[in-house]
Amino acid sequence: MDEFSLIARLFAPLAAGAPGALGLTDDAALIEGPAGRQWAVTADALVAGVHFFADDPPDLIARKLIRVNLSDLAAMGAKPCGAFLCACFPRDTGTAWLDRFATGLKSDCEEFGIALMGGDTVATPGPLTLALTAFGDVPAGQALLRSNARSGHDIWVSGTIGDAALGLRGLTGEGPADPHLIDRYRLPQPRIALGLALHGLAQAAMDVSDGLVGDLGHICRASGVGAVLRADLVPLSQPAAAAQDLALVLTGGDD
Amino acid sequence: MDEFSLIARLFAPLAAGAPGALGLTDDAALIEGPAGRQWAVTADALVAGVHFFADDPPDLIARKLIRVNLSDLAAMGAKPCGAFLCACFPRDTGTAWLDRFATGLKSDCEEFGIALMGGDTVATPGPLTLALTAFGDVPAGQALLRSNARSGHDIWVSGTIGDAALGLRGLTGEGPADPHLIDRYRLPQPRIALGLALHGLAQAAMDVSDGLVGDLGHICRASGVGAVLRADLVPLSQPAAAAQDLALVLTGGDD
Image (cartoon, rainbow over all chains, first blue to last red):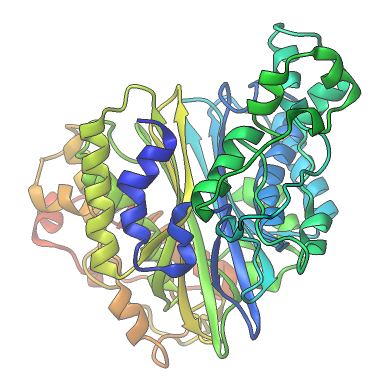
């Protein structure tokens, strides 16, 4: 059972009574905030050996954790405010490693103006496992939902596509180790300012985490529409263009 | 470095700008809700082999996950509303196991009137690892904080103390395998109704998860007070009284 079938079959029924859960099909849920505002809330987990390398720099692991979550908030048009961290540290995690991890958290908390609001710290006999729940505020009723795409809408992407997937190939030795591409894999750039600027301009949005083709499919399914993707118009970075691997660029994740 | 030093040294500085984080020393954080309300938000992680046994019944694992979080909300005097689940499943997790896990989630979502609002589902090469962020609402300014204890206050506990710690001993073969005690370890009972009833009666509260003595110490530190604990007045279940292990009863966790 893949992740999406699992969620649809087992978990979506538990969300049925809560309209703000958006059927567990959007980048974040919406809960009531102070007058005229909603909280967009998202949660993502990262596991060493699956979503990053155990020997990646600890500060970059922390920042990636924050950024994959903030990217979901950006895709809702929300302004990030805070986060809750559940950190499962292997028993042999040393003080120096933890200090660097905390330095990375601090750096991104400052850069994005968010506070650490709570969480849990436990020991694990397994790999480093991190779960973050992040929240941001959005004007009530104005979140950029996946379900708002309509026939006739144009499709836009921000930045360049496929860099992170190519960066991962470089790290595993399956492709050229281009520093720009590797940086894009290790340190995603959440499009916060863009998400906020899209109110009134874009109707639907999502972050590209499972690949452009797959994620566009999510918007189409949520909105009940189809899409035509002109592969020759997808913006590529210079090293991505040089890689000449359009299939990976269009279907690779982590952008 | 123990959990509390770690949080104080590395994580508390990241919460400094947010009063609602309560210095990362309370059962939950407080964020703004709709008029006159606050959201109490808490996050707890459970790891197989650390917080439960990998071969525990899957529905009980799910319900324990929910209940350790709802217990934190109860200790704030909050009414649970919803939760975000990050689930890291070992690759060999089968459909039957997942179905039973979801059945447990459903059972407790219904019992406590909460909805699953979002989350993340990933594969892990390590042990089953679950992180839940739960939220509930509380009248603004009326949360039961750890820092509100004052000289002269009485100390009350709900239910009986030490059962869960003795239940764990029974499961590991270090003590008698009493069904009542084991049930208290596997399936905590969040005191939701009691928490709500305490508004206007209790000033400070917390759930006993690290043991009565240790957790009372947390309240004392947060409030700047001392406490006298009369061990002979601590309520015990019949099997806990029979175990005659007062040190474990007063310092064991998971109640």
